[in-house]
Every structure is written in C-alpha cells, then in structure tokens.
Length: 427
Length: 43
Image (cartoon, rainbow over all chains, first blue to last red; front, side, top):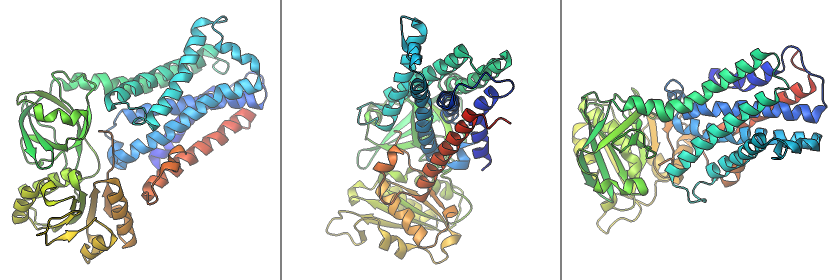
C-alpha cells in the first residue's frame, strides 16, 4: 500500500505543482481537462521508467511478473491520457492544429508528430509484439528509444508552452523530476552494464540435456560470483562486452553453494538456438539476481511443467548441499519419459534429501507405471499433504498448467501467501 | 483494458487484481484531472 501511495503521489505531483500558486485565467473545461490529462499522462509516462530500472528494493516485494504486468497496464493508461491531451485541446479549440503545422513552427510540429507516432508505436508494439514479428532484442531497443524520445518531447513541449509553468521554479522542478526518471533508463541500459564490465563471467561448460535443452555453466573471471537465493533469475548477456541488445532473463538452475553459476533453457528462440554452438571461454555478463520466487523456511510442494523446473532444480540442489531434510513434493509434468529434463538429477536428489517426485506424463510409453495425462485438479488434490498450510507452493510451467494449479490450490484452501508463481515470457 | 479481451478463463486472481488496481488508479487520476480542470483543487 505504501508503494502504491508513493506511486499515486508521484503521478499527481507535476499537475499539482503546475496548478499551485497564481494561475492563468480559466479557459473552459475541455481545454483545462486536456492540459491536466497531458500533465498526468506525462507524469505516468515518466513513472514507467521506474519499472525499467529493475529496482532491487521494489522488485522482491511484488514479484517481477506482477511488476511487468502493472507496467503494461499503467503504460496503456499513461499513453491514453497523453493522447487525450491533443484530442481534448483540438475539440475545445481547432486552432490548436497549428501546433502540428510545419509551416508555423517546424521543430515543434516535427517533435509533436514524432511523439504522437511514438506513443501509438509503443502501445501497438508492446501489446502485439509477436503479431508484428518483432524479436525481443529489436522490441527492447525500440521500447527504450521510443520511451525516451516521447518523454523528452513531452517535457520539452510542456516547458515550451509553459502555460502553467510560471514562475521559473516550476520549470526547474519538472525538469529535475523528469531528468531523474530518464536517468533510470540510462542507468539500466548504460551505467549498469558499464559497471558490470568489471565482473565478467566465462562459459566453462555447455551441457546438452534431454529434449533440446542446454545448461550453460559459468565461472566468475574475477572469482566473485554474484550471490543469489535459489529460485531467482539473472539477466544474461553473452558477448565480449556488456553493452549488447542480447540481454535475456533466465532462472538459475545451480545450487546456491556452487562456486559456478548455471542456467538451463530449451531451444525455443533465436537466442537459445545459439547455445549449442557456444565455446568454453566465451565471455558473458550477468545482472541480478531478481525475483521473489524463492525458497523460505517451510517444506514445499513444487508443481512444475517441462523446462519450468529450472528454479526448482536450484532449490533442490541447494537443499541437498545444505543437508536440509525438510519435506519436498515435486509434481512434474512432461510430454513423455524421454523429454524429462533433469530426470537423472532428480533421481540422485531423491537419495540425498526428503524429496518425493511424482512424474506426470501426457503421452507415456507402454511400460509407464506412473501418473498419466495433464496436471489437473484431481491429481493435485490427491497429492497434497495433509497439513496444507504448513507448506509453501511453487508453480512454474506452461500457462494453462499454472492456472489450473493456482485455482486448485485456492479451492483446496491453501492461503495465497503460501503460493508462489512467476510467469514471464520475456525470453 | 485491451488485454482483458484476450484473457483466459481461469486467470489468476492476482492478475485481475493488478488490472483492476491499474484501472482504479486511472479512474482516480481522471477524476483528479477533472477536479484540476474545474479548479476545485488546489484549494
């Protein structure tokens, strides 16, 4: 609630400051509403840069997928407010069309047209990235450039018009506020990679696993590996320099106690397709860790599907290394026996910790004696421990499986506080 | 908003809560914008 209150206050701050003190004469409701919406839209737009900042203090409290979703929702509202600004101004007084007239003021017209196109572009490419066939890297670059451009033009426009920004201190206040927002983007995309260049990693092993899955094992060149909690993820750049468009989030699959760090992924996209050809010694840069999908003190039920198991593997390996004998139940769905990533690793882990593994196969072979079909309500209910709320529940896998698992756990009376689920499709 | 139309039947409650929260913030800000526009506030 505190973060929400701060967010709301920051959203209102520019319009509040602009409307304080002595005000210019009233120009009619629609025109004034257009101005207020413009200020609030710009403010919300600036606040979006907080989300790009991957702020370590905020992210763990909410979970990254929830923050990304909030960013999307508020981003749409910000753009609608900002676009409503010229619409209302034009409805109130059509002579405002001159703002878009290159004959009257060329730089102003170009920048406002650019900002309008930029906002529509941001909206469309973010909501329908895949429909437009944009790769993640191109989209990420476009998102940053368009976002920065629109914010810059928006602030410049409000200062240039300056109707509500007299005396000078209001302009200085707004400029400083929005400079701070903009600097978050610069920090994430430039300063952080720049600092990160001093902590390179080296790929020490590329391990092929079952079903087109690969594990990258990396060692910190300087010996100081980043510290993480099992279940968290890192942003990885595989390049000689940290400044690369290729930065992707991946769950860590190794134990917290290992000196090296490993991530595992299935060949699904352009980026993961290149993994099998990676050579040992290749430089990589890691940023993180992030995520609140982490093991607490309680015993746990892990409901996993396919390659979604990687954070759970990190948890289980860490428990084994720490000789932690808390009870863990893993309900693990896969298509068939040949496609179970980490099958052998799970067998070994069963001997080291108090782990019960329930494999659920969609299309099992003839000799399969375990569970068949999809992970559904019946299966989950039948495997739940008696003292349901003494356990933490971690869910990761395909979206429909996660929906069923969450809904079933809630129906069974498991408290939301005990359910951890992280979904993101950024990679 | 737009994404609501594409939502699966059994979306997690948290997801909907965030959506409603964002919409609520949007509505509150719209109301505030109107108040600023009519100059009811600042006092």
